[in-house]
Amino acid sequence: MKTVDVITSHNISIEYETAGVFIRGVARLLDLVVMFVYGLIVYIISVIILAETIFSGRWGDWEIAIIVFMILLLPVYFYSLIMEYFLKGQTIGKLALGVRVVKLNGENATFSDVSMRWAFNIIDFWFSAGAIAALFISTTDKGQRIGDILAQTAVVRNKPREVYSIRDILNIKDISKHEPQFLNVTKFTDEDMILIKNAISRVNKYPNEAHKQLIRDLAESAAHELKLSEVPEKKLTFLKTLLQDYIVLTR
Image (cartoon, rainbow, N blue to C red; front, side, top):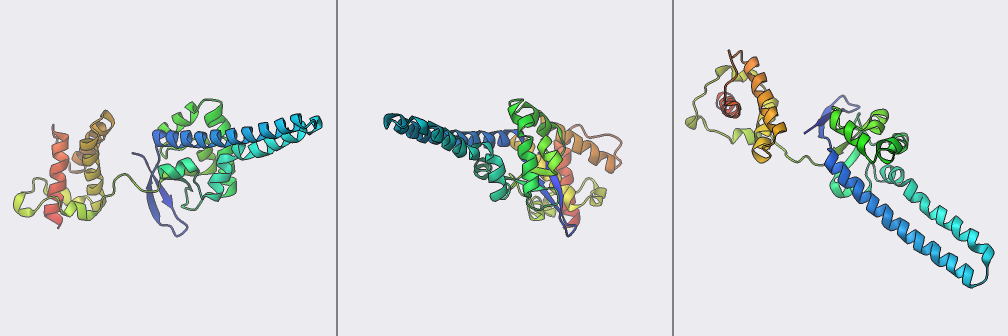
């Protein structure tokens, strides 16, 4: 789960959860469906106009039908540019999936920003069938494709999948039910504990290799910070114990 720290004009840091390859791919697919339906409607209208000119004997008017067709297709060509500018960083697909484009300073993307993203659709999506975009989104720290990097934007979730507060932590364990094992756990912060709780919840819900590796990394970092001689073998249990110790010793 990648995040991006947005620094506002008031020097306030806001952490957003970035939209991954899958959710952005689904949003793109919905947008393609919208564009296809619109294009189909335009095609039908143009065929009707062309048929009317033929049957009425006005052969010279076929040029008008073609011009009308080309004009009506312009919104398809400029779809993401128009939508992201007027819907403040969203297209119909992004709106449906609850994601949007934001500048890295927390402001709404400007016309030049969405223009840059639109221009690089050619490289990110059309020339590579989305492979280049997927590669950059998966490997960059802020989940950015080339257009995002150049425009200094990121695609974030409007609402994070999981929200935790210190109140969640305070409800974990009561002092009467737990004796602390790591007394110097108090050197950690509430934010550290929220991160650990988040990781534990994620691995319990989605026990894949990526989340298991996160647990291992957190356990090693915590053991190093606590100056333990070695990392406990049961790393998930170790993190749960740290979380419980922290509550007992700080509440």
